[in-house]
Length: 441
Ligand code: PLP
Image (tube, rainbow, N blue to C red; front, top):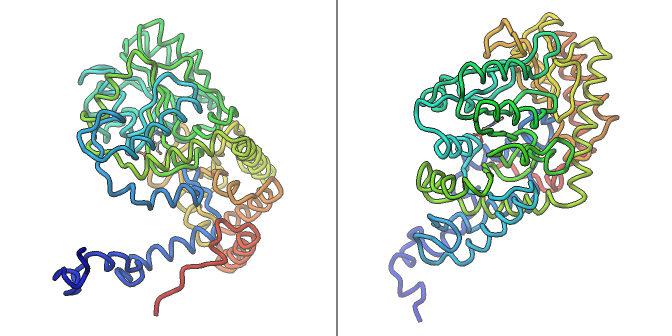
């Protein structure tokens, strides 16, 4: 039997065998330090970016598993590589659970991201030059819904719809008028910064009048949809796309679902059309996430996300801030800070210093550029994962107000930062506070 002594590479100290087991801190102290700092930040600041969350340790450990080593081009049972028996089991579990979770006929769990999930749909349903209708970016839409800087705006003829100027609610009449005039092949509905529910049945009937297909992109709401606290577009849409890492609280990645009639074409477009080997570690982690999302506990979690966003919104309104669309049905609020005499860019920077991580965001009909903006997008998925409730949301609104009102005053920011730190210690996430990554000398 071979042993290390008889292997010149192993005996000579080459990077083989047991040498591959050295810890990150020894192998690459620089990257270790970035991970340590990010870990500390996520533990001690209030993560309120609406698209972020804390995946469970079960999900994270699957992401970091040996599944990452496996090539598996193709689909379960039909691979271009040998040795796929176990990743087949994982991908089949992910597919079955996604179908159950969203009540869909077909699921493809391979998209590396939300953008690639959408790309798979476009390539399955459209020809270059076809027309798509999507929500305008400043009104809450996403780049992959036809923005000119995205492949989607470059390959297709794009027409947009937005929100009504008075209500700031999706303008279905405008969508219908645009559809009638431009006869799109697909209507894309979904958003990154829209705080309200969408009437998917109405979108379906607008599409039917012009013979268009419907793509519902639920990237932001997937966890809420899974838990039944946001409408499920599946009965009304030809395609449903999503990310898995936002409210759904899974690994970073995409998922795309459709009616059976499009399944073969969609699968062919995801692989080999736009992707190569699937990320089996992330697919396995998606399966774990879907199992978690099927639980009663996840339903309670998702309900609390929305309760918290409403509480935060009310508390901000009580402190004099205007909320876009006058509130929220979801996991996020959009605050019009322009009205309070500052830009989104300033607000984001001031709050970060005070330990509240949010992002600047355009609001509908914003007169500032996307780099400056007049809005702040504030989300509750991550703080809810820590176990925080309405009482903490009122406290957070108070801190946000103190920092913004003082225009980022250094002393006030310092004071708030230390209060935020205390709250984070009271609501620890994972076991990080118990086993912090030690700082290297
Ligand atoms: N669709 C919507 C509505 C999104 O908000 C996002 C991301 O923010 C995406 C798609 C794209 O997801 P990814 O960043 O994984 O490409």
